[in-house]
Image (cartoon, rainbow, N blue to C red; front, side, top):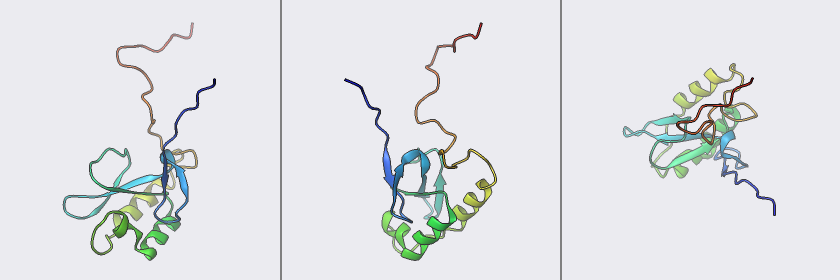
Length: 118
């Protein structure tokens, strides 16, 4: 029997399309209540997932989806997220169509060296 690997799937709060977690960007609220990008998806607390695309951010803002997803009153300011996305648009491989550059699994196991190419 062939084994299939599990790929975590999340829903974008902007366009509401489902996508692999690696293709989405996680947003969280800081302790001060400001919206922040959690590019490595490791910060604690409730998060909202969105495509790293200005159009999805516009949709989420217009629909007031971020406030609902993060369970906060009002709509958080999306300016820091918009700036983060704009700064990454010119960099290939950074949350592009193939996803972020961070691996979902460790590349090498601790204490092991990669094989030589002799």
